[in-house]
Amino acid sequence: EWVGPDVSCASEESVERYVGWDIDRGIEWGACDFSRMSNLVPPTLIRDVLGLPLAKVDQYLPVLREAVNKEKGTFETLAWLMKDLEQTIVSGQHHPEGLAAALMDRQLAGRAIEASDAVEILMELLFGGSDTTIATAGHAILHLTLQPELKEVVLHGSQRELKVLIEEVIRFYSPAMGQSRTVMQSTSVGGIELNAGDRILCAFASANGDETFFDWPDQFIADRFPNPHLG
Image (cartoon, rainbow, N blue to C red; front, side, top):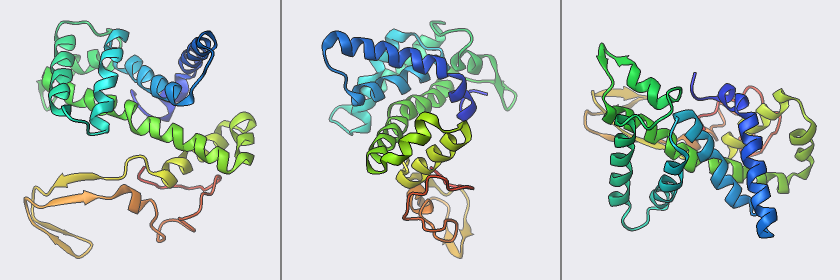
């Protein structure tokens, strides 16, 4: 309902509007940098989905980038961001039709969702819009320079061809390399014993190159289908 390919397709008009606005700014400045555009458009679209004020995006983006780059002082600035985001939600500054409003209006396990829990969910999307989505856009542009013939698919291909191509970009470049988890209950996976309290790494990038699931996993195949990646 809130995230996924269908939502992205429905946002096509917004994408065109934001890209056009940034190109107009580039014309005024006499320069247009794709890296600036890729850093602007995904977070702005995420802002639309969440229903946050545009001014908040301008405030939050530098903090999120610092966190992704693991710069000094990240913990302090992230703590500020989460507190400010919670205050924004509690004070009703969000759009009534955004995800933030929907979270506050729903229940989980028979109880209302606390503002602090909603912040945790919204932070995941904010990070996605300022990190992995931007990385995927950059990798896509990079690969088009390596295989320029694929520009034909982007410019004139069908929606299905374009979606299949995007899925291969995500598999091949794996913007989310992995995610750590804590074992809650002793068990075994693939013959490996795991004890409660153990820390494990779910290596998405490794799985996306698993030759038991993918033919020629080290090759970029634009029309690879099906593509059960974990990107």
